[in-house]
Image (cartoon, rainbow, N blue to C red; front, side, top):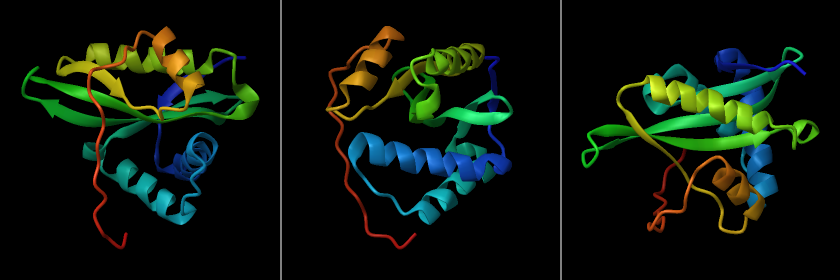
Length: 154
C-alpha cells in the first residue's frame, strides 16, 4: 500500500470530524456532538494559529489523522507542538500507518527552528496508545493534567 502524508484542507473537514468523534467514542466512550466537532474542525482549518491536521492518504482517501496545536514555552524559548486527535481507521491498524504519519510529523517539527518538543496526552486507561507512544520515543512526564471547563454555548 502506497501512503501519502499531507496537511489537511477544508475539503477534508467531514472525514476529520468523523474520525475525531469516532476516536472519542472508541477511546473514552464519549459521544460527541458531531456538528459541533465539524464546526471546530472547520475553525481550525480556517485559522492556522489554532493548529493544523496531517492526514495519511491511501487509495486517494484519508485513513489516519493527527492534529497539532501550539504552546509557547518561555522556559525553552520555543514552541511545543501538542499531538492531538490521533486516529487510524480500524481497517488500517497494525500496519505501521501511525508510525509513518508520526515520522512525517516529526520531520516537519525538526525542520521548524522554533519547535522545541512534541507533547501529547493520553487517557490513563488507554494502554495500547501508551505503548505506541513509548515505542515512538515519548516518555511520561512528571506533570499531571488538570482542566476546568467554562460555560459556553458553542
